[in-house]
Image (cartoon, rainbow over all chains, first blue to last red; front, top):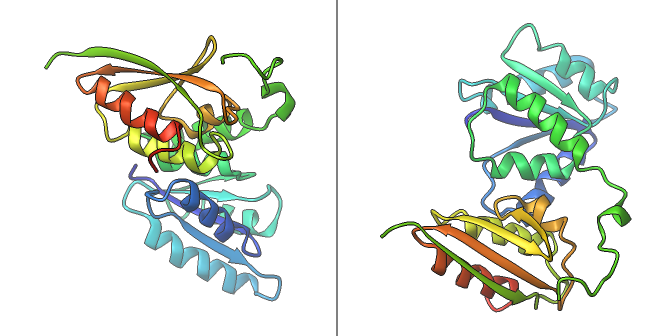
Length: 139
Length: 90
């Protein structure tokens, strides 16, 4: 996949997501994570995001995953929409990152953003719905 | 070689069942093969290239899973993936 991936979150949620991803998929491609800290100024946050966007962009743009729409990490990321080839998807979860790390089919930035939003939503479950009714089935 | 289909049943032997790390290992190993890999618990078949699909099988230790591969290296793929399911290869 040639679209870059950057996770921007409150505190180090994004870094920990990437750690968990690497535990499950050790060969995952290089994804970037940025922590937004409350003591940072907006200018500092913006500069850090811009610098990482440059690193992450291999020419096909960068998919920015944030923890929550309306939060500062999301709001500052959104300010790059008109400046750089960037798409922002809010509400990052581990299934989304695992899927991004194991994708085979190439997608454009726009296609990837919509695909991964749908995938993330689909993988929020009431866990008991996924459990077999009879624990002995399939044996 | 021509495309072949191979299928075999295995009993999950990993201590905690087919949880996230073994599922990640399964997908990584499956990607080394040209064959398409499918896994089933009972009648439900999922793609062997998706960690989340494998996790949705909720396969605890002792569960029987069937692995089916279709492609030129189908038999080797099923055998090695089966060892992983059984907890005999990591």
